[in-house]
Length: 248
Ligand SMILES: C[S@@+](CC[C@H](N)C(=O)[O-])C[C@H]1O[C@@H](n2cnc3c(N)ncnc32)[C@H](O)[C@@H]1O
Image 1 (cartoon, helix red, strand yellow):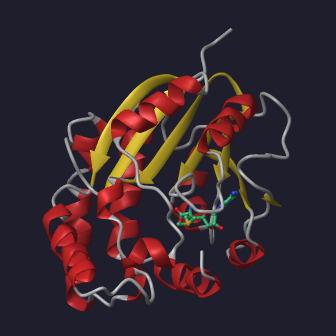
Image 2: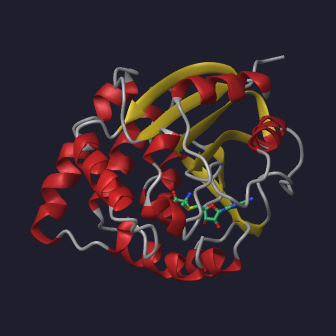
């Protein structure tokens, strides 16, 4: 990501509608298998500035985060995150079978991840047999826009693609859904306009101030949580997937 995007992410991730809505969706998906108060060993792969760890992951157990960017880890430290490492998803500095759950939100899509399958194989390696990986990734490569350029997204996925990758890495696919369907038409219009006007440079969408619309937008996105948890959202701006490492 561009260095200035880390500061922006840190500033907005506690209140921006997208993070609030996605936190509700992610909790709903996690709650299919785990309950808040569980004592899971959780790895947040590509933890960014630590928002997910602070907002909800720590409710499910002991969270370790890693990211390859020192800028990101510095912001995690401001949140008093203790278990942190600087590393790449393709070379995770933890022993085989160390975690119950690996989560990775909007990371495998990044330009700096040269080989997403190698990263998934690393997630598989560090999970206990029977452990799960929860992925969220941007959807549909044809939707690429200015935001993707700013945060160095090199690829947007489909559900089918993620399922294939998970299987190739040795996971059984337990859950697949799109998310952020209700706001899809607005995003489609915005990204088409950017393309027509050749506006591909500039800050990410996180720089947009939504003012009084922030609350209603968060509510609209959060309303999808039960649908995503059931795998019922047929299209959207993100893909959510869960894979399980088979028990021995
Ligand atoms: C869009 S941000 C998402 C951050 C966080 N997961 C979240 O949901 O807010 C992508 C993150 O992936 C990190 N990243 C990119 N390539 C990476 C790699 N090869 N290994 C580890 N982290 C990486 C970036 O530094 C950035 O923090």
